[in-house]
Image (cartoon, rainbow, N blue to C red):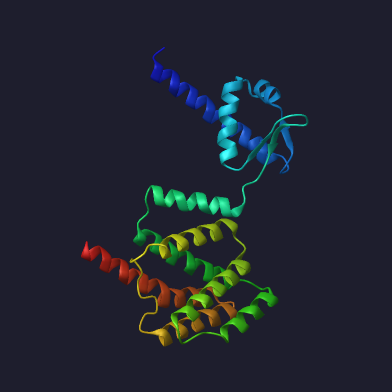
Length: 235
């Protein structure tokens, strides 16, 4: 058999076995013993070398812990959120994603996040938002940056959508890390920004998703689209 065909067959076997073992790990409790090297090789009907390749993939994903010695074996694990965020951020840098693409996605995610928060009925969280709204800054950009972090973190707690949160965090981190590629975020000035954020917050507190989306589109999305259209025109 030609060498390239053999290599392709090996890669397919590793990929298939990885999928099967990954599902076994997800079906078990975190930290549970999945099996020993030889037990898993027999149950998966693969050789030791193939299983070791599979194990390296799953270790890299944060889904497997290999313990050696007495009491050792292959144990299921779960990657932490920070590791997942780093992996997605690395993916965006390697492909790479453009600043404009990340900015566009960040804008869309913020609008959806704010709209979803308008359906929150948790009075404790809603009270936090009311209090936060009384501290809307109209001064230095640093004050606005601090407010935005608090606002978004509160929206995450009001919505509770883990994948949505991770995508928002990573795209925001990526777009703000691109030096020299920032747009003026405050529209016609800091007062304009503050008034716009107040309208979004009031719509959320009114439990009105449609109004929230309208206000978010008006203040946030429209400005980003104007920048993106301008960037394409310059290209």
